[in-house]
Image (cartoon, rainbow, N blue to C red; front, side):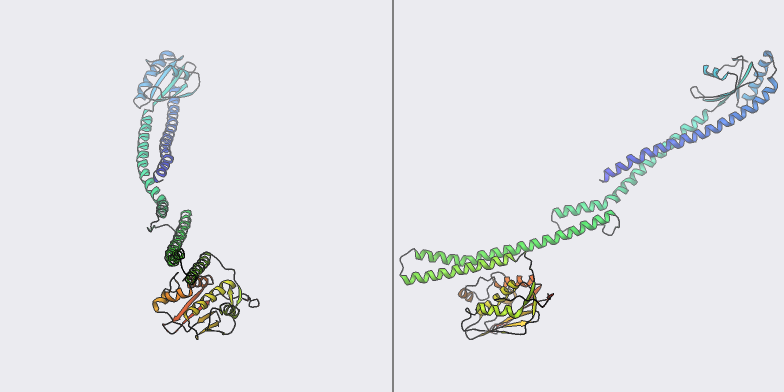
Length: 457
């Protein structure tokens, strides 16, 4: 683009320069020629008046003598005179060209002769009915000056063209520099490089507007690429963990299926069938939890006012058959959250189910209604700092033996964390080995209307 812009500038400006050089030299010559004509005509008038006084009534013989005298006298002053008697030159003079005969028409006439050398400006005026005076002025010096002016003007135009070529290249470089930066930025974006490109975002013209728009687009694309990369890494980690997690129950199912192919007592076959049913239930639960987690990846909630006590009481009602020998209490004052009733119920159910799995008969689980959320506290085995750091990772299990006993998939807390994120909230953990665990969900979203609540049965 820089080369094309330079050529375009030169194509437009160089002919203009040479035209201006020609026009100025030609105009200067025309003005000089006009002044010279006026001067010649004034000189002719003065000479004619003097000659007319002398030769007005003269005869041919005297006219020839006077013509020779005046010719020699004015020739010494740089003025050439030719006298014609009845259209014929006298005193040995000759007309330079046949076209000079057009001047002998009985009245004052002027002629610019450029076909012969030297160039002349000629003025003819009749003295009487027989005699005509012709004054010839050499103007070849003006034509020489014209040629010199034109050579000088064209030389200056040529030098100016060279300088203009250099300036055009510099100007085109300055003008196209931000466009080249945009091009480099686009190429870097295409090649997925992290190269920093300086864009003229501070300019107040169209280039600056384009640069700012491109910079915003570049940042948006980079942000989106980072998000997609994180999602891809998360998805890959999830798939890797899923493949690893499914290997154990599938291996167990395959081994039990081969055992069933043999001859076994009815009791043994029943035990193997129960074990297979347990593994199948585990796979089914894993599938359901994974589907929920996947659906929530790109979902958006449709929030409504929700009663916290209604959610916690619903959780106790649904999970009490799993908590054999474990006491579950709901305490705290009711408050209203603004969120998705079903998702908040799943969050409460998963946290309570984890508390049940970590507890033994005789222990107590407390569901606490908070002003901006709720908590689930148990008296179970607790977690180490390492387990707390990885608690929300998919398929992470602090106690694998306990998880196998209860059939967990290791996706519950991952699902809980995603639900908390959808509600612009957080999950906080308080735990230590042997001292139980308290998980608190807190959201900053406030309800728009406390008069309507969603209940959970």
